[in-house]
Amino acid sequence: ESGGGWLASWRRMSEVLFDRRWHRTSRPSTRSRLCVAFTLSVCACLLAACHTPRAEISVFARLIDEVEDRVCGAVRVVEQAERQVNGETVSVLFLGCNATSIGARFVQPAHARAQLVYTAMIVQAAAAFLRPSAEGAPRRALCLGLGAGAVPTTWRSRHGMSVDVVERSPAVVLLASRFFGYDASHGAHGRTVIGDAFDVLRTGGEE
Image 1 (tube, helix red, strand yellow):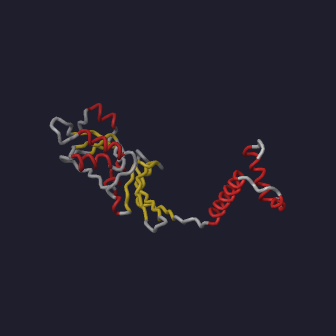
Image 2 (tube, one colour):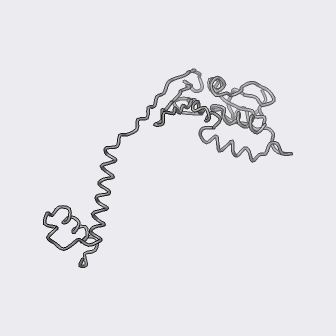
Image 3 (cartoon, helix red, strand yellow):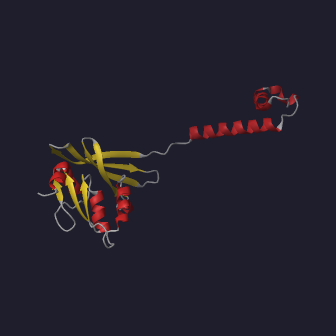
């Protein structure tokens, strides 16, 4: 083709596609053939995508429990489940305070229950560098704010640390204990203090 480059090739392609007299003209160049093949391939892919039935994924949520307190207002436990295309159900339990999620854990599938949700995973992984089993390493920690209790529970169970927790909402402590496996009792694993973190820090944690 003369000097038209790709623009001329596309013009030639349109002649091939839409001009019934194309067979009377000279044979299209290789570049024109490639343009035609590419365009037809794209059209075929678009048509296939439009006619491919979309996989349906069902999602539902239900309220499990709700407790009112003067600190957070409504503290709720909500289960959200999603049925995947392969038929497997992924279910997550959320702890919410004033419409904000402050913690979660997997319910289904069963093999995911030991996994942790949200950025708490990063905090817990960082705690491994404390090496609580090593001589002279920290054996105690203070956690300001409980959430669903994933951080202190992991530090206690996986790293053998004694973790004290300060949480200002009694309802959060109650629901974290009831649905998320948090141990709010006092003992060698630590203690749970209901109160404001600033006040606890000022008094040195004395009750």
